[in-house]
View 1: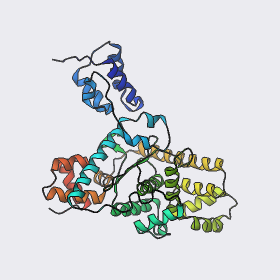
View 2: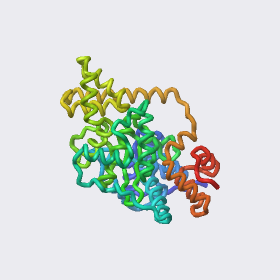
View 3: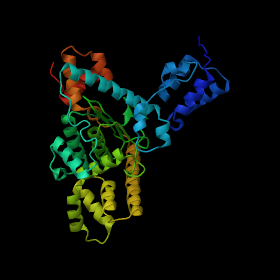
View 4: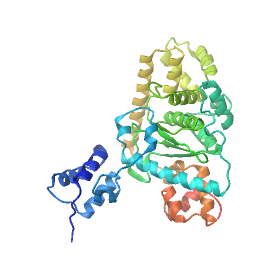
Length: 390
């Protein structure tokens, strides 16, 4: 026997305002519209279906007043935007997931009497880009020409992610909420975020971004941790305009590490023989193993191109990436599940978690929750990532 439920009109208004209608099935929007009009009352099964599709917690639907949710991290968004002011359930749920990861890691660090990384907040008042960048290179044990050992931006990203993780930052990455492929993370909503903690800072990277975008975001967020403030990075162009001082500094530091000014000037003079700055920028992008936008920004800051050319190159880079993503979607193919799962989880964090489980300090159910796995996939992931021994 089906039981119909009367929902609060105010709660229904709140639900409809907080779902991204373009990203949920049409029947979900239809249900909500019918319920709101009073034409029909929902059943428990229908509410559960809408809850799963929208990401809005099941219990919220039965409240008499709309829930009051607070998301402090949203206050640190790079630039104002509609998506930032009205965050999707996807980013909200990812933030909640990362809070749980950070809470576990913090408790584990306290239990193991781990020392806090000294770089957290150490550059709070440093606005000297080159000095700040040199400090970061020292912390991460990078030579100024570290990029010459990378064959591609993919290798550069892996190198920096490993270095930042070993320095004491949890670096997580995904393009979906949990394991739900029907809940992709929108690159237009955010590229990355950093959650500062005095013991276990965390960086989350939206893997739906381009490789060069992820590379820049990673360094941008690490700079924020060195400054000592949280960050929600949602600037698609790394424009450096209409942003706070901390954002400008973080952008500049990230660019300086990827493309050191002294090396940029030298290489520009060597390569700028085409009498075509766009060709020069393309050549430098390959040399520094980073994105076109970063090189274009350097060229803009050095007066080699004007802002209109910079914006044109930035848009071209976005269009190329969008076209690539479109082709990948059309071709389909799920890839290697465990390779993808492993790429989402910080290796140092995972090994600590596995060791804690095997020592009986952490329940398997908690480990499954923190890694979005079950008993079978968790053990296979342990084998894939080389976790702690039993």
